[in-house]
Amino acid sequence: MTDNELCWLRVGNKVWWEDPDNSESSGEYEILEIRTDSDNILYDDTIILIGNGLSEAEVWALELRPILSNEH
Image 1 (cartoon, helix red, strand yellow):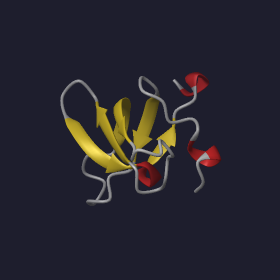
Image 2 (image 1 turned 180 degrees about the vertical axis):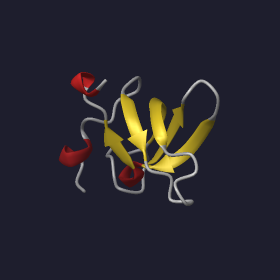
Image 3 (image 1 turned 90 degrees about the horizontal axis):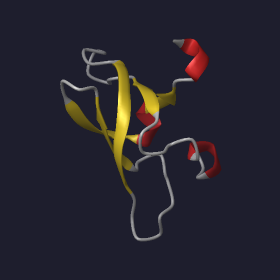
């Protein structure tokens, strides 16, 4: 994915995380922080801090999908 394809990643956005560990923690989360390098460009392997009110996880950008407001 390129930076343009990841432009929807913003702090506060709701996302679906597909947990690569047997999908044990897959679900809806909120982006809490985006940890980019000094270039501020988003890559597939950019670390994103997500949380759901019960837990937090550091995940790669490529593991996230946007949740559109009309989906819920």
